[in-house]
Image 1 (cartoon, rainbow, N blue to C red):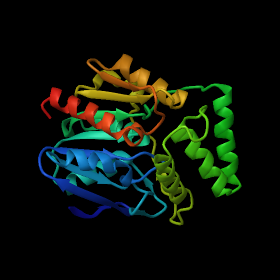
Image 2 (spheres, rainbow, N blue to C red; image 1 turned 180 degrees about the vertical axis):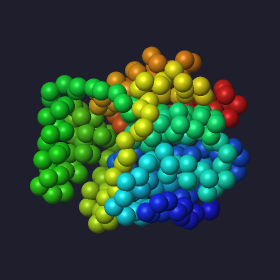
Image 3 (cartoon, rainbow, N blue to C red; image 1 turned 90 degrees about the horizontal axis):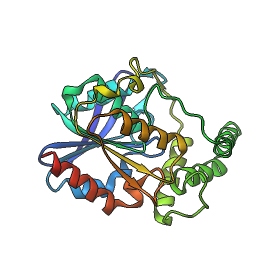
Image 4 (spheres, rainbow, N blue to C red; image 1 turned 120 degrees about the vertical axis):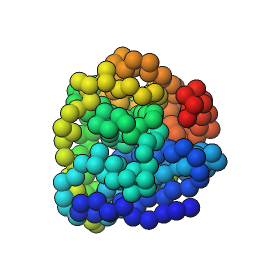
Length: 270
């Protein structure tokens, strides 16, 4: 395994690279770090070069309190590792940023796998009972009640916002809970994401590479609405719904997720 740091303005991004073959770059969720991708690294490093990195403000990456572009950070990783183009697999905010990168630099993306992500520039109003949960999350964050905050965030993102606590496998819940706790209690100055200059919502018809949309039926209404936008707005899109998963199907059902990703790559000769 090759690992190290990619310098970026006001910080550095920790990366790991393993395997050989055409590259797959894994972009983690906003409730996680690069370790969320363990099952995918194990599977796909058999015949691909697999790269994962901690985004700015997460894991072992470091940043000053600067404004930054996730698109530029992702490009810096590809440039540092001399990757001309790659299959991007992004979950949650990593999916949104990977979509934005695909539109900004289409020549650098062989295919995009969007997992329970967002679509920049889109608007969605969730049901009142879900909105109340996110209001509670904000109140707990303001109060710095970390234990209660992390418990609630784990329930929302792993079990599902309107699902019973403990629905998902305990090992997955505990792994995500630990990652959320480390994010919420991080002592480093918090960098600020710059707005996307050309949001994706108005540009979906420009997506020309193979696109696989993966969505959990138990995820938030906003995430599911984003999946519908992509399904309706991108020609030739492929979609897989996980009826028994919320926000992290790659962790909750890794074998099924890996099989779907493998079939997608094989269909497109990647």
